[in-house]
Amino acid sequence: MKKILNARSLMLLIILLFPSLLYVVLSTGSHNFIKRPVYGPKVLSADGDSIYYKLSGLSFDDCNSQQIELSSFQNSIILYHFIENKDSVLEKRKASQLIALHDRFKEKKDIKIVSIVLGEASQVCHFQREYELASDQWQVVGFNSDKEMLREKFILNIPEELKENQWTNLFVLVDNKGRIRTYRDAVQYVEEKALIDDIKILKAEEFIPKKKKKKDAAE
Image 1: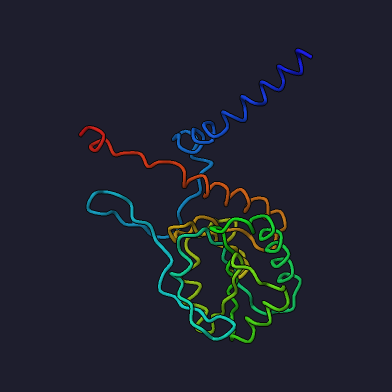
Image 2 (image 1 turned 90 degrees about the horizontal axis):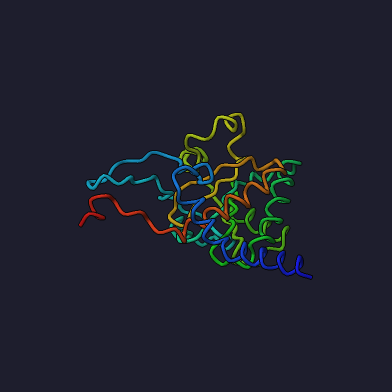
């Protein structure tokens, strides 16, 4: 009985300490491996802060041909992916992963999936019907302009191991500030777990206070 009580006490202690341990892992410089990079160009502000690239300047159409601005998706963690409306095994693989990810995070209002259909509004409606989408957490939009414009906005200095992939077969994970944080291979089932971890890390970042600069701390 005493051993059981000791085991329970240890488990309770671990549970109570977990938030603090998570904070240490995420905020300590020696554990930077758990953070996700910010992709795209950056510049320095007058104060010496890094200003990172943010997605902007695009508009889409919904199923009813109503225009939706890219900026309307900000303030949420967004997983973007691209649909070419090809009846292929690869497209089915992507959809399968999206269904699993949607089920995993569907109760989280600030985590969304945005499917970008490379085609007309009718194709947006078709995708919605095919997967019975009626969720604010999974939105479908169409992009019927030059695909190169879309690629230039979303695909920036991707990891070396993904450069052989067709860009429309990539998942693009964006944080709640509109910054690209992760690229994943959308047709590999093993990437599903990696994406779940990516999303959890971005969520944890929201609870880490920004470190003050030395000059601010000295005042």
